[in-house]
Image 1 (spheres, helix red, strand yellow):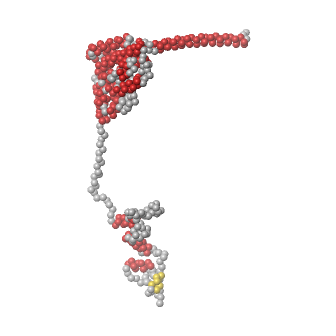
Image 2 (tube, rainbow, N blue to C red):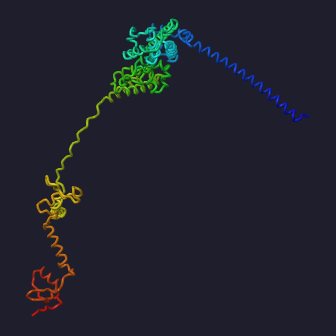
Image 3 (cartoon, rainbow, N blue to C red):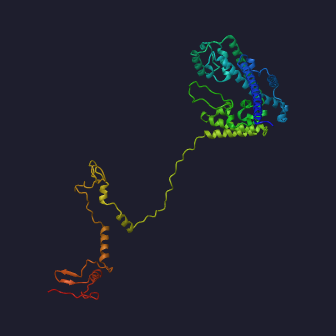
Length: 485
């Protein structure tokens, strides 16, 4: 029977064996990784631009040679109308167009690779040039033109770059820290420039072929943007199907270049516009509306490409309809705003207005009429300061009150007709024949002739109102007359 110590020793032996296996596997992995790294470094060293053929391999590929040969034959032969009744996918010319679209994309990528090669080589001579000239073909042309020349005033760059960029390049070259390249490095750089220019020429030839067949491949798209622009859009997108799947905002940017303004104004520069700016509609649109027209063209071109990808309208009628819509919208944008129409006066009312008049209205106007005191308070005498409630012009002003010569603020209020009538009515109401007797009246009256006599006030008022004579002892009287001797 094994003891506890034996079992521990057995476990330790197993652990040591497992560790040896793990270490051996790790060593193998490290060795494989080192081999991979060495292989990658070897590839990078070969790509480190010692040899141009190891970097650019497209021109020597059999696919490139075959397609270019077919394109040249097709351009010499012209369009074959007999195949236009076939299904689009079965037409060999359509297949050649699809291959040309794929080849144009490969050419673009190859030009970028060669541009990097030229830039890394020529950086020792003119390091600032790559930040001034961004386009690969323009950069290759400038490098080939300058060569090892240090004085750019002796180099004619007219026709290769805009005049403003030529001036900036000349000034920068006079202060550059670069040195002339060795002959072998310069020769490799010039060869790379020639290869980039040859690839650009081949791309133009491919696009010319695709453009000549655009009326058959994409009739609706060609109707809107033109055959040349349609070929460039298809070539950049990678075919008609790829263009149909692309959103309109990306179609607008196809072919856009990064522009170097070198510190100049951006007011007249068109940003974020690609091949769409080469269309006839865009060029005939006023500058203020070109950004809107570019978005409209991109959206309609996308719709036309989707119609063409499904062969929805081989005759191009849909493209003509979309083009008419574009023209109508741009014309609508250019219309001046409608003139503001003068508002006519309302028709005069010939019927007499219902105005209240008569005694009641006159009484109401007299009741609410402005008083003489308020009239004076609302007036101001020229050249004489008015008095105010708080003095020094503070508080409520008194106007011409007290300035009429009396020196008093209070104005004597005259008794008007309305006030007299109101007073008389009030007196008749309190002392009239209404039956109400004032508590301040007395039945005793003092007369110089008769002395003290006891009268009935109500009867006396009744006599005055009726205009008849009555005796002191009437039916209404209850007191006798007392005569003083």
